[in-house]
Length: 352
Image (cartoon, rainbow, N blue to C red; front, side):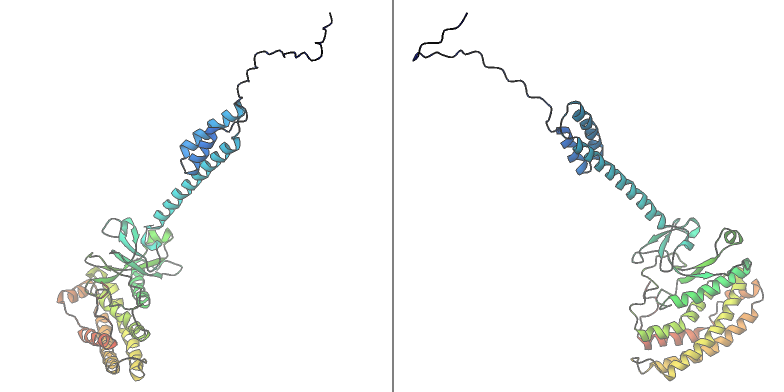
């Protein structure tokens, strides 16, 4: 049947039906909130949170076809980076701690330390800043050659050698308190030698275990003229102090130290006489007199030390000298103090 069109001029109302209901919006194409949260958490180093959210976001973006997969991957990568940095920090921290604790012979001159056990170096040492109170300071290492000389010889060579090395390293040997400061020497036993220890370690410490202060190797407060003169006298100062610290059982070491004192006195006397004849520029007018007086005292002391060395023939002879309690080198010590005054350096013990 054909439909007859409406006559011209007649309005035909269009047919209306119910409006179509729009389909619910699909989750596909939305940005994943979990991926965003994972990125934020990883960015502020909340690693556990970032890992969990990142993994969940990866699965949800794939299952729901959401955007944000790359954000989740970036979040997990950041978490991995934070973890790696943390591990590196732990390893570095352990290395730093290890480098600041160990055997005393492992540390270079200028290293200040506390005894790990509070008594001696047996259990190792803990490195400190020299600006803090400390038990001791490494001032030198004394090599013992390529073959072990025997324990007695190793002891003598180490002690005498350490005194010489310390004298060259310390700008002012009397700046640390001479009443309690000594050069202590740790030399290898036969077993330590076999284990690879090839040198003695020379340590400046207080015999009464009181704390030291300051860096004994720092001579920045001295003028060039003061350093020149004090370097000439340092070895005999340290030798005289070390002789006060040798027990009867160390009589062989005492004999070697006395012999070395005689030799060092002769060299010092000649050097001081030369300085007296041509004193350093910028020094006081009374310095030549002080230099001459100490030079003369050194000559006398050299003869005394040589005689004492010859008389040390056993433990009892050195014990007798200890028991006598005499101080045969007072004239030299007095002349040395006068020289320090002429130089204008602080009184002995200024460093502590």
